[in-house]
Image 1 (tube, rainbow, N blue to C red):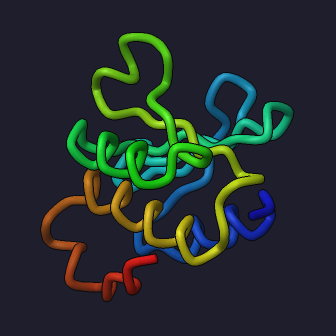
Image 2 (cartoon, helix red, strand yellow):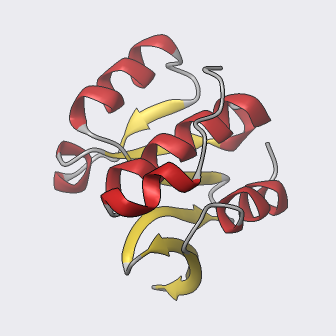
Length: 115
């Protein structure tokens, strides 16, 4: 998975805005961030629920891991791009978007198939 593809996928999500967040590109819907790209570190950070985080980390331990601080306890999850394919990333990013998007915007996007 490469960052340009991740950026395009994020901008394809309804209501998404791209902004700088502490020197890193972030993507939000209605001012709620759901993904931040850490280009130098080769990872993205997604906003999952703690249950989603646990499931992804268990099923794909090379690709997903909790952020190692209090942010991780709130569902923020590292995605190691070298170990994540496009389909899995799109599915995970869609979940993160749904976690922060207002309810009225959810019907504007069909969920992608599970990876």
